[in-house]
Length: 445
Image (cartoon, rainbow, N blue to C red; front, side, top):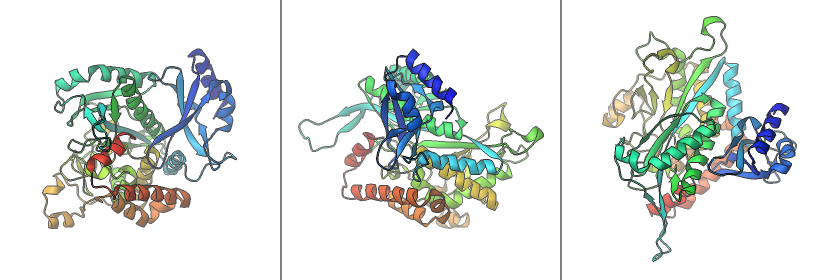
C-alpha cells in the first residue's frame, strides 16, 4: 500500500461525497462479507485495517477502490485478512492467490484470467398462506437462449447493470439472455489474475445491488430454480511469458500456431496438471451443495475429467482463437466452476494445479472432442476419462486426499475450509426438499 494510493482514495471520497467505504472480502463459504468505515477515520483504517474478530483484521487494498453506483454515498475496496500485528492471516483467501501468482512468476509467467458468470433475475416471492414453504425466485422472463424477447424484457435492468459495471472500471465484453428463465450472462474482459478475482467480487455485488434497487432479486447461485438451467461461472486463463528476453517476452505462452489445436506444450502440461487435480479442484470451484445439481452430464456443465477443442462438455476447453488475433487470444476454460466458490481460492488452486503440470511435464492424454457421456464405459476408461464428484462431500473427500493442494492451502486454511463445507453438506443432508436448498442458496449467492 503506497501513500499515493491512499491519498488518491481520500481525494476521491471527498470529491465524490462518499460517506462509507466497504472493506469487502469473500469468506470460505463463498459469501461476500465486509465492514464499512466512515470517511472521517478512513486514513487510519487504511493503515490499521478494520477489526472483524480477535483473530483477524480486514486490510484494504487502496488500488481497488471504487465508488458504488448502486449505493449512492458508498465506496468499496477489496481487503486482505491479516492478524492484528499486520502479518497475513494464514487462512486469508486473497493471500492464497497472491502466493500462487508469486510461484507462477518464479517460473517465468504471469496469468491473465476472467470469470464468465451467469445469473438469474426475478422477484422473491413468499407464500403468506403457508409461511413454512421456502420463498421462491420467480424469473422476470421465460424467453429462450439468445432470444430478443429476453433482451426486451430485461433491457432496463441490463442497461443499468452495464452502466454500473463500467463506472467501476469493469469492461463489459458481451451480454445476452441465457437458456434458463430469467437467466442472463454478462461477461467482463480479462485482466491480471488478482484483478480478475477482485473484479468478480465487485461483479457479484453489482448484479445483486442493481437488482435490489429495482425491487428485483438477482442470484448467481448454481441452481436457484430447481427445474431451470443452472448458473455457471466458467473460468478462463492464459499464461504470459515474463521470463524470456527479446521477442518472446510478453507473448501468450499457451499459443503455438504449429499445433493442430493452436496450443503450446506448456498449455498441454497445464491441462495435465488440471486433470490430475480436477476431482479435488472442484471442491474449490464448485463449492456448494447446490453446485452438484448443475454439475451433471449433458448440461454443458462438464461432468467428466477430460479436455477438448471447443468441446463444451469437456471439463477443460481449449478455446478457439479470435479471428485476426490468434496468438494472443488462445486460452483455457475451466467449465466446472460457479459463483458459490471463493474466487481467490478457486483461481489460486487452478494456478497451483496447472503449475504442477508444467513442473512435472504432465501429459493430458488425447483430447476428447465428443460429448464424453456418449462414450461407452470402456471408451472413457481407455481415455482416462472419469466422472467428476457428484456431490460436495465426494469433492471434499477428493480434496482431503490431494496432498499437493492440501499442503499449499496450509493447515489452518485447509482445515477451516473443509470444516465449513462439511458443515454445509451435513445441514442440507437433512432435507429432501429441493426448494429449501435452492432458497438457502439464491438468498446468499
